[in-house]
Length: 164
Image (cartoon, rainbow, N blue to C red; front, side, top):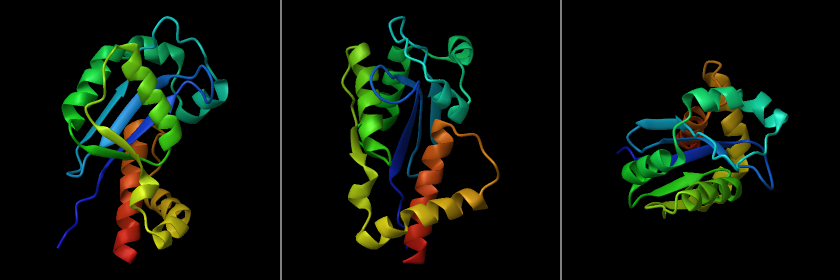
């Protein structure tokens, strides 16, 4: 019997802390389908951290050229994730950034965001980092981007559960 893996979401941002905002959101669903979109910053979203840019390799120019309007991204998230619980391994940051996205466009998420830790047992939590490192080592070099990161998180969970 195959157990479905949960939906996983990841958000890349302009930096960390005050003033940061979402620049990309991606998810992977239980069936393995994915969604990813760059987010065109709102005019008053001005914080930019060069160290975050080095990590995710997304420049302000890339966002200007390829980002989708915040309202479009929020609508798409609600369409694709409606009435689902979606898990994040960076819940505190992702909750804040998704909240900012939805507040900006005066919308409410139609899905529930939860901390991935809620579905890990103690053994899985203890082995998480080693399993994630093994998953990253087993996959070809990939960009540090939202949907790729969401897939790595989902596959790490699969790796942990297969070993149990």
